Amino acid sequence: MSRMTEKLSAIREAMAEQGVDLVALGPGAHMHWVLGWHPHPDERLTLLAIGQDSAYFVVPSVNAEQAGAHAGLPLITWKDEDGPGGALLSLAQKIGQATRLVLDETMRTDFSLPLIDVFNGAEPVFADQLVGALRMIKDTEELAKLKASAAVADQAMQAGFAAIRPGLTETQVAQAMRDSFASAGAQVAFTLCASGPNGAFPHHSTGERVLEEGDAIVFDIGAGFGGYPSDITRMAAVGRVPEGYDAVHAVVEAAWQAAAAAAKPGVAAHVVDDAARKVISDAGYGAYFVHRTGHGLGLEVHEPPYLTSSSETILKEGMVFSIEPGIYIPGRFGIRLEDIVILGANGVERLSGLSRDVVIAGT
Image 1: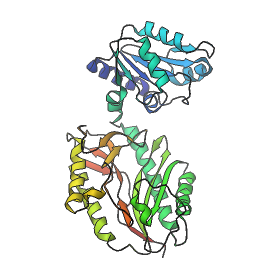
Image 2: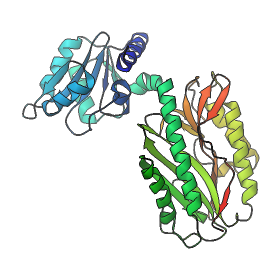
Image 3: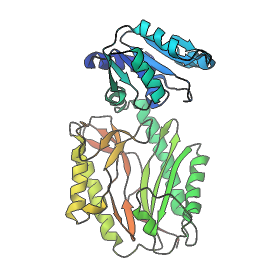
Image 4: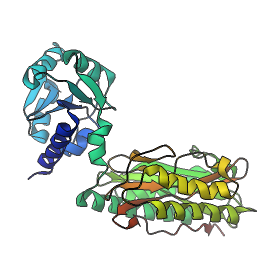
């Protein structure tokens, strides 16, 4: 059985359970998960339409040959001069009456609204509860690719540590990590280098600030490799850590350990966030932990499950997500410790082989 056939079978099983008649996916991660490929997204309506016993690829005629070669599914095509309206009517005739319609939440509105019009009366719901839920559980091939991508990120992180020198800019240090990714054949997604007080901005834009001795540095980096992303955050310091740093770092590390210990199959996602947040709040830094504890990682850098204080998502074996508590003290420094983990039967397995200890460099 091909991977596409396996994915379609899993989707149809979920469709039957949820009373769904049609799943419509646009070019993006959901479609890629099913087909192992998706066309470049643009303004021309393109849909993977999955019925309870059929599947069609609705594509503009200009992309028909390519879609047929990659998808191996029946095509419903339309021409630029005609527009996609006729193709959608043809799809509706083939699918028949629909009472519940699953729509790709990332799909263009000018794809989804005409589809809703054609299937008038069907209840529209988002794909995150169906395809997204299936994507949360990684298979053996996906896990191997995520591990390989994480190893490339470890190398890039070490290149960043090695590049630290007083007098260099954040951009110059980040370039060393970008070069490492590129040399490994990875597609750089982000190389955040936040030095000194810039570390207190969780999503700092790497800039021209010059590194000084005593700066704490936040490195948050990721890239695509083999079709799957990486995401890791580590801490460094130029020559020495700033005053009071070690105590705060210890709190964040304790929060990471508490979150990791709480992550078990059958546990609600918020329990993991609660565990990290309690450690940081009990230490008096609750107001400085300003984001969720983690997010899923798969075809996308951010995808379900999300480890927030309100998430009732039940964690399951085979899920992959970040654990990344942080403390951000305005005007001083920030500390975030992020590892991607695989959830196994007895707990979590880290993808990175790097220590979370602060690295003193640039001496």
